[in-house]
Length: 262
Image 1 (cartoon, rainbow, N blue to C red):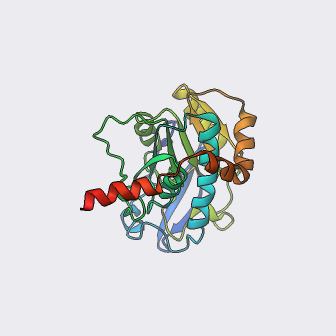
Image 2 (image 1 turned 120 degrees about the vertical axis):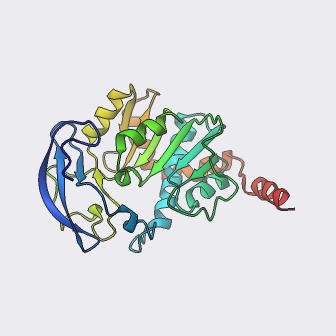
């Protein structure tokens, strides 16, 4: 089916190029005339693409989780209430949640595609009336088949969303010129620009902050945009200082889980 409208803002789209996903499925890519979002055609191949939820070529997964930990800890500690509850949506194997809990942040996990290996016992339950200060959503927005609906769901949980996704260049590169299209694994089906997020922020009465490339924040809180960008840059150096001021949950979690087993 040829999409007639943008999956983000419902405005007209135009065809820009064709590519091959999973080495066998031809699909057209479209660009929105309004918000700049770039999307594939109807992603009928997703069930096959997620048979292996973490794609084989993702060699940066562990390194990326440490970086996300540094950025998130710094942003939370200086811009939000660090003593309350947090939620990692689309949390993979639970590495990030475990890292954040080890630092002392009360983080919880959820992922509909991947088994929780490292944050077991700390699953986020939709049925509970959870008050979440900030929600993280790393390397997931480019996977959303219905990004507008997904964002509304996330905003019903928290009005502060820290996320990662690579901005697509303008004009959009050809399929063989940009690694983030992910044509080999077929899981990346939508690509954002700064103005895409600015549109979403305005629609939901939020503020938008970005490091200009791959870390972004939609938030109900207002603070200098330069502060967000600076904190993401220095997060590697801030993390050890924050860690000294926080109380790790590692041992407390061990005692809690041990009590449930016995």
